[in-house]
Image (tube, rainbow, N blue to C red; front, side, top):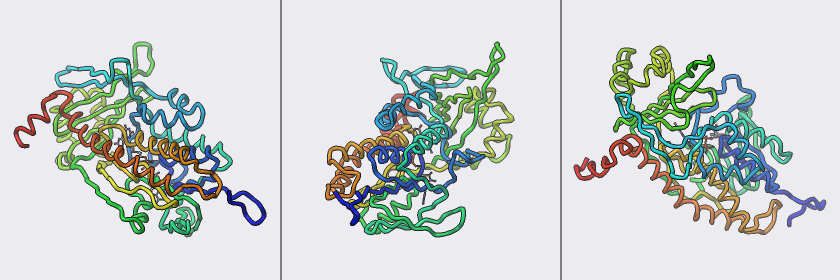
Length: 406
Ligand code: FAD
């Protein structure tokens, strides 16, 4: 155990860079282990933001699965239950097969389901939970610019004041998303294998608002306990329910199809041809307004290895393995990263005070154990794009394409 010259026990200090879902979950796990934790997030604190949609250009809601729930359960007591109070179970897919035909495909025979969860609610809950720990400090509007892992120095730009500020830490965790600065810094000191692949498709979010039922109350316009899919082979739309009885739809299609829709007439012609049953649900005016207003986001898959550097740094979540969203596992997998890392710390008996324990070996073990799984999930996510837009209506689609050599 390490003590200062005055006999004070020196607690280990971890700097978590990136206060997205995965970074904040990591804060909770490290805080629970007794480390001194600093979270640095580029954006403003979501809890004081007026326009919360600025928190992320990513999806409004997400599918939470058993993988993610397990990681929530194993941190702060009751966190998973709190989350489950605010989610909507989706017990299967509901395929909109055209001409009003609907087909339910249950996720399991024993009632297994995934849950629709709102990103903002989950982030807020995690932030509020982190704020209850006295060993956690959170710095918002701090953008990491540079770090030196060997001496544990991090340099940030304080976006509020414009000042450059330095902090130090024993361990640096990069949870700063797909375009991670920590990962870029790691590449300078480790021989990192790295690959990224943009798919030709973009996504755009649209809303199906609540309807008023015969009691005069807001109600869902479709069955809320399904993940809705409109599969059209080269593109598709999905919809997940929200607690305010709306659905968030996500239209996925190649950039060139988005670019070909230039006018409101083009849009209506396209929707009438491919997603006609969704027009009365979204509403023509809303469809035109949201389609042209909302961003068209790109989709990238990123793999890299290793995830760690000595006993000094590690990357988790999208910073380590960004995947296309079709398997609904990006956040879930990032949550599992944190749970797996914590399990390895337990196995290696990693202490919250500076000591000669095997922190470097634990981080190395993390890369060894996690990389094959994370890579497989990235591949499954890529495969599931074809599953969702085609195989759900045509199980032989992939096989035929292979035979035809297309
Ligand atoms: P992020 O959410 O990207 O958070 C990174 C944080 O780091 C951000 O807050 C950012 O501001 C901050 N940051 C970045 N750079 C710096 C810096 N230099 N200094 C300080 N801070 C910095 N996953 C699921 O599990 N289920 C789903 O259903 C699902 N649906 C999706 C739908 C879409 C359309 C998309 C695009 C993604 C979806 N995902 C889903 C994936 C999921 O959104 C991501 O995997 C998840 O958000 C990753 O979390 P993260 O914390 O690792 O990264």
